[in-house]
Length: 117
Image (cartoon, rainbow, N blue to C red; front, side):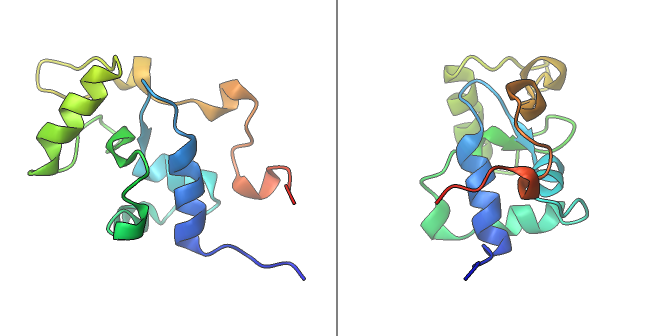
């Protein structure tokens, strides 16, 4: 019997894969799981305290802006510690630090990922 993962579980799987020193956008994560119009819901998934062990500090808005206070200063420090560089206005330099799973031979859509049992 095939059991589909929930939307949140799929989001968590992707967030867990974002490598240190890189960031992904809410929209990018939504697209990877095959739900390109649900970036806002990716953000909602981050509110589940059972997922707070994941590297949510690596998830930013598409222009490199970090989320609001009080988490923004923690996010900035964590990303800086990982080597991420910023513009003067503290936006991530996306051209250089956005995670590109396609360069790691990872499918764009989670439905194309190999199944592991």
